[in-house]
Length: 260
Image 1 (cartoon, rainbow, N blue to C red):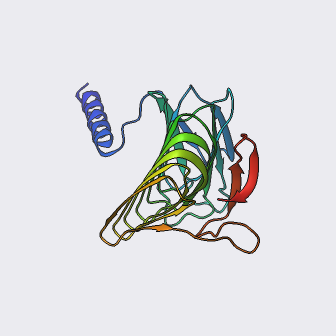
Image 2 (cartoon, rainbow, N blue to C red):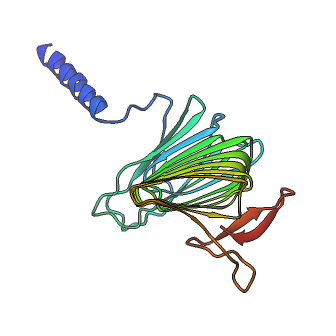
């Protein structure tokens, strides 16, 4: 009897340590094990925010009447330490996490495809490559940390962007009446604006803007810079600082092909 009680006590103690050291995940979380699945498709409860932490390649698109997450694992039989992704919805926010990459693992890249009718904000931390398409609504916020190149396209009245830790934002195809962009810690952002631009560039970061908005408020701090881009190439396309092409939304709502 005493032995059984001791075993239970040890189990409870160990569980409490794990809970204290890791991120608390609600009981409604849905674990996805890349060991057993190449592609996992899950229909989620309604959400209008996305919070992603981990080195996923991410595609987010606004589609009518569908809340859906697809997890694609590129693991192979050579993967010695397969990784597990976990996702859950809480307070109308979709959270996605992935186990850290083991130094001995190979071929374990994980991709996400997220569909939702309306999104108001997206947070990306550690995303090597990301694409956000067909953004609509009165206001949209994007926070990027410790990531690679993120492309975004859509139409909104107000666009708020925070880019940090060497991340790159290509928002050339994000049409916004008013734009607030903040770059810090060697981050880079390219934006297009039609009316008002408020830009803060700090800690050797840069904001590049195209067209001439009616109002530009530049705030520079510690070698940051806000730069107006001039001119067209011979082909009539705008000059790019970085980034591949992406579909730009036309004023009538239809997509046109252009630089992102």
